[in-house]
Image (tube, rainbow, N blue to C red; front, side, top):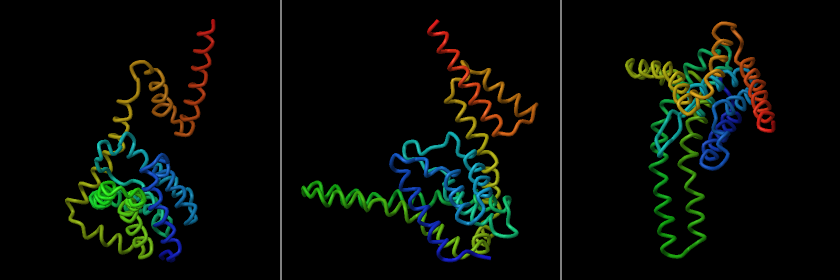
Length: 247
């Protein structure tokens, strides 16, 4: 079973918009959880989208394009993983088996997009030298095309052609490459958490981290329950802190 050209086109446009919006202030559109949920809504399986998106979001915690560095494109992986995972007989594991390699393979196209964008910047520099303000504006607006198209075409073609060609391509990859991707996919969640923890003031608020660990490891509380507990404890802490400051 494959999707029609309409859904493939729509998902390609979503991928285009998401990566372009990432260049501006609306960074949340680029999050795997968001695009996974939107994709799930389109293909009729929101739970699949949330599951795939949340899993990839865990992998991306603490990772960012610092200094223009290229990182795995979890947004594109979430779209493809959700679209294929929602197909009959594929499921969550099959979706993740496609999502993680796709996210890692997209790093190559990301480099291509970044390199091609410089051509438009050189055009803008020339327009500045000529004093052509209108041309400068157009050159900068057109500069988004390489970014967007490096996401639009892979998503559109993969969804339109179906899971089989994508899986065949993945099967064609050498075993050592796929093994490296699997290891990377297993390590990335831990790395994401580690990077996130380095940015948190754990020395000051370590009791909260300990409470979360006890809830998860010993009491087996689901993640949503832990999140709600964290919100409640955070609100109580701030209220008590405010009362203490007044008193």
